[in-house]
View 1 (tube, rainbow, N blue to C red):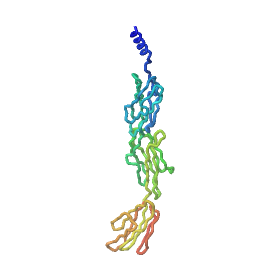
View 2: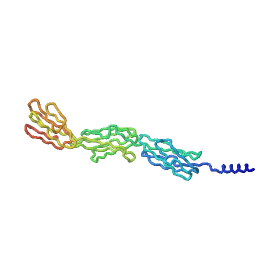
View 3: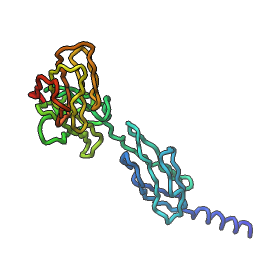
Length: 275
């Protein structure tokens, strides 16, 4: 009789145990490409554990008691051109619930030709090619209006058409193309347009001629000596002619601000009208 009574008590205690219950919310959470900490709410009547199947998710709160209701996970930044998904599984005794973690892709607009593109001074319509995984918009930083974007969408079309007015000045000019997605800057391209070429000529009858001095930030020039030879400009250039005669030296430059002749001996003509 005593054994039967104990057995009855044991059966009663087993039958009185509540069935495990578990609710985790939200069932799906979406995370930006930057990643960050995500908080999940756990409602369980027994201790629980949590784990993930992805190496880009770190479960901070790996276990909790019945009264603990917060589960923190940390999602790494996504540097890939595609979105990704993974699971966080919470277990409470025999009950399991899976939370899907969806991380958005990193918006990318990658110029094929690089971050800096240069154009000549003439008016032109040009295309720049980009690799992208999002729909984007293009803004021009310059307020002068010499550079215009003719096409502004590129989810599948990876070329952006540009219109450049002729640069009638001698100065280099610059603008920035800003590619944005959902209001955020994704990429930038720096566009440069050269000023129109500058040139001047000097006619002389010297056997040896030292090049006039040119000044200007970022200045480049080519010297044509008048005997069929040419050189890249250097301030100390001196050219010696093999025969006597009258020679026309022509200098073609960009971004030159001034020129200075060393002396006028043997100089027959100087033409600065295109400088």
